[in-house]
Image (cartoon, rainbow, N blue to C red; front, side, top):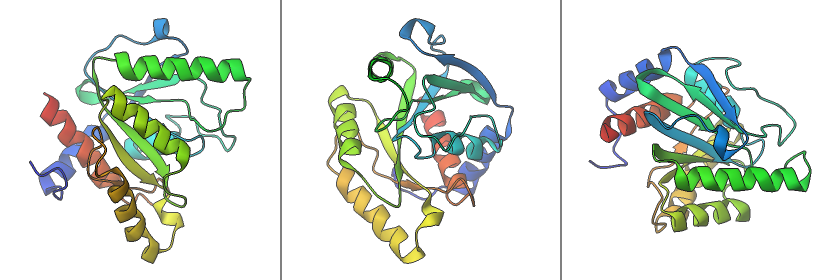
Length: 216
């Protein structure tokens, strides 16, 4: 299958149905020992603090407050898990780059995330969220390098695409795709989305539904 091929109507509908079902908070994990059992298919959202991970969870599931959002960077201090239909689970990882917490706590979160990413047997893909206004930053590239070395499949989601002028959107997408083209663990397609006006949400749902069908 061409991984960058447009999504069919059937895939768009499959994505809609996947996220139209009931979604619930499953659990929060602040340590490896408190991770929920690895069941079904799991995807994870990673990114800098305040990039919009929680907002994207809410937009995908069409829920206003399934995931807690905050204007204060670094509020997510554990891995939060959300369960939907078809045994699909979303893991919302603590943001990197800034945290309103002591250094020792940040180090613990970092260790937890590393252990989760390299040791979770049902983790199908990590979606790394990048603010479309700024593009890939050095710390983002460090995270991508870590995922490449660990052999963890990932894809890039450009968030807040509604906040940049239309003529700059496509160049940002192409620039990002070019930056990941030769990265061994990167999925070739970049997903531009907006949690505010839902731009790209239908395609992103379809992409997750396609991943789910391929892994069955």
